[in-house]
Length: 126
Image 1 (tube, rainbow, N blue to C red):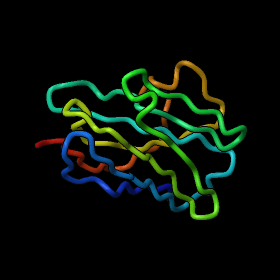
Image 2: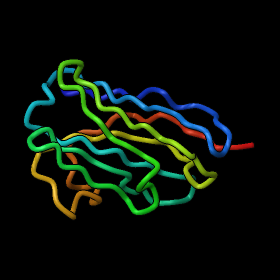
Image 3: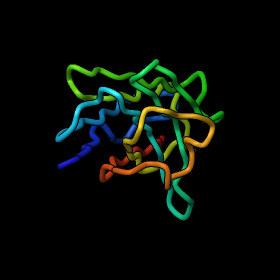
Image 4: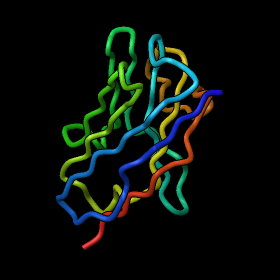
């Protein structure tokens, strides 16, 4: 059974950092792509970033470039999202999703991703 579990969310002040984890079970991360999405209250779910295990390709939303970094540890079956210099507008529930490893500019389409975790809350507040 494919399962993704996010962790690492919490309350952080603006300018602070958090590292989210997405742990996979029931499947290998070999030959997969993993994405992070987020959804703020009253807004649509939006793509944050994604990574492919095949060539290590990564994509980032413009709003997080230079602040967020996605990485993958295949041995631990875990994908990380390092978030630095957090802003109020980063407040959201963060989800990870998995699908085939061939990613392109369509990665932000939620329907492209087959399996999702239940999310972890990130609140940026002073």
